[in-house]
Image (cartoon, rainbow, N blue to C red; front, top):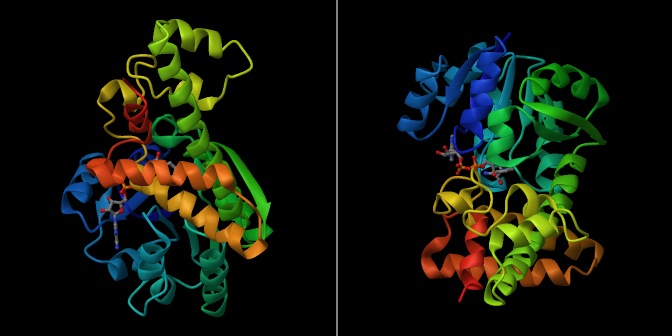
Length: 293
Ligand code: NAD
């Protein structure tokens, strides 16, 4: 089976590496030539264009930054849905929004293609380790077809329901990631300003009621988690600007149901301030710098 993979960034590149390691033939496309060259070095085949990629792929995975880019790759006449093979499986792993997912799935159904939304959680570390969680929206049949492919890149593959439900689950998860990154930053910086050693404080939190994924595996305080972006000058990982996108998508989705999201709103403003100060491409853990003395 040949897989077409579009979007070879922080997440896409290690996901491709895991597909290759599991024996899949992978043809890749990215607007960055350097990203394509890096994947080819790992054993992937380079597509010359989107249409080139669609000609031979049995399944096509997208890992792109925003809903607008997803639409520009999937929905245009020269794009994936119009040109993919009949019955091709198209899996959008980008964090997009439920409405885009519903519209893309409907367009695919008209064109005889199976489209799923399958955003992920686990970050770059999970993408490298092949332990991502996939939240899948779309038909049960499509989910069963996709499961073995997604298992090459992740551990938890969950069918959330109809088209758009994967994106809905992802937005709920990521607002919690955004809010908890801010909250752990506040806590760690209060501890430091009261004279506590950050490592000691993290150890206490991680065996106490404040423990969460951010405090334990993605602690924003530099030096606490050795392989986290915070210990690498906030490089790699999950860009602040992408978190602003996710929090905005959650707020937009909540607007439709009149669901109040005050913590999400405040967290979005803080990440926006960080981006405004020129740090939009840094990992989300860089928010800790706003609280440090
Ligand atoms: P990234 O910016 O590192 O990578 C995006 C890639 O898409 C880049 O290589 C870029 O060149 C490519 N691209 C952009 N426009 C394109 C186009 N029109 N055609 C082909 N390629 C194009 O982003 P990322 O961190 O890998 O995130 C990708 C998606 O995964 C986002 O939706 C993000 O919200 C989501 N996500 C990221 C993380 C994380 O920790 N980084 C975790 C979970 C989910």
